[in-house]
Image (cartoon, rainbow, N blue to C red):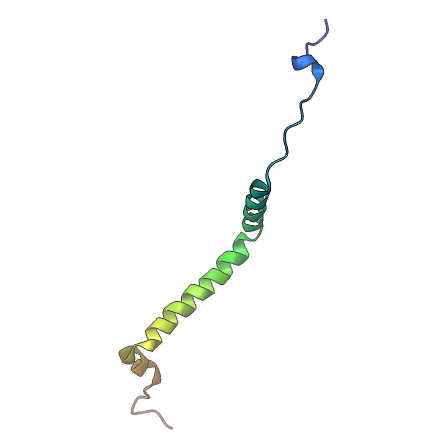
Length: 73
């Protein structure tokens, strides 16, 4: 008994995706590929922004800059 093939055994070609679809797919592929590096850089950017915000306030800046009385210099 022979196997029946659907649609007469022909494969219909799918239309090629649009440029926008290909661009979005390539962006998602890149993000999936470079996920660790993106998170690594993002961690340092966020840490820098938090530290910069803390040191811009005068009360916190005095803690970092002011030397204690027992400082030898």
